[in-house]
Length: 105
Image (cartoon, rainbow, N blue to C red):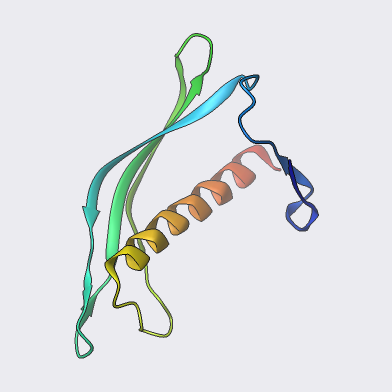
């Protein structure tokens, strides 16, 4: 169990098989971008997050995140994996902001 009181006291519990809902994430597009020192293009992804009922498999909610793009402030993101990782992190942060705003958490 992870208790993060800095973020409103939200408690995260690893999958114990007893949760009612789960997230199913599909990535539809990945642009790895590039950085060659004198020129760069940010990486970006398009993904869909489905909130599903664990017992029935029914989709409760579907969110499409298009062109989730992030970059390093230092400009030293020469590694493709790091750029793509930051895109997933950005998509996760935006999804969390959406949930917090929508459900007033």
